[in-house]
Length: 61
Image (tube, rainbow, N blue to C red; front, side):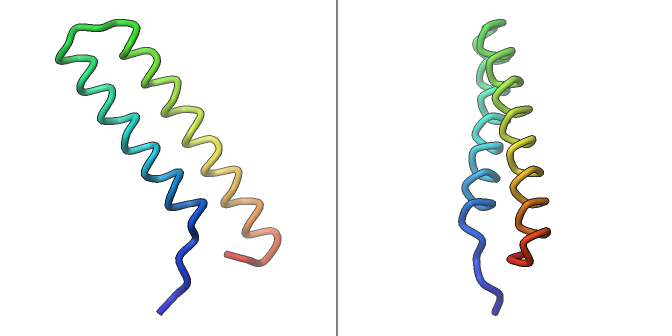
């Protein structure tokens, strides 16, 4: 069994929470919540890709 990459798992969970936040904000008709969740998702996904690239370069992935 492969080893769990905890930083990547945490970022994936955080991105999922941001996606859920978009849905909740749409249901509540909150423009600020929608934009905050979208920005959070973009930042989280960017950090995830950056972390994965760094781990691949270090040979830990």
